[in-house]
Length: 126
Image 1 (cartoon, one colour):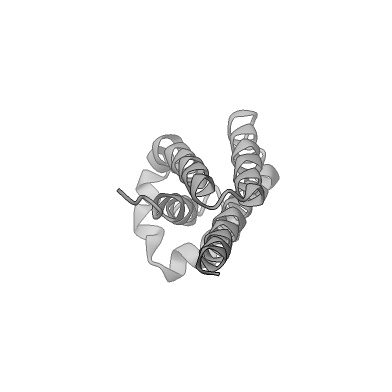
Image 2 (tube, rainbow, N blue to C red):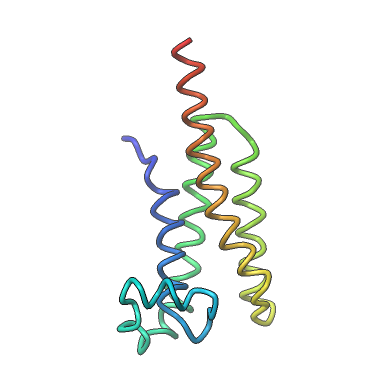
């Protein structure tokens, strides 16, 4: 069964969760407003405590699964470092700058993984 969508699902889910919590993430207020996620504001605490960490873990698991396909280290390293930054920032006193870097790092790791998969497919065709 192909599960290549897991990493993308986790990254986009993480982004949507932070966009739905404008009180915690001021940088994502325009994105959340544009997508109409302000309706989720009453559930901000639930989303940050119970939805956000699992999405980060899903992204990390998906990144490892993608690594097993393309065997390129840099997307996996970017994703692992980003997840560690997010969890340090989240559980060590809400260090917002670490979490911002980690969230953008997860997105970069996902894009790098997509690129590595495409390169792997090109090499296998040659």
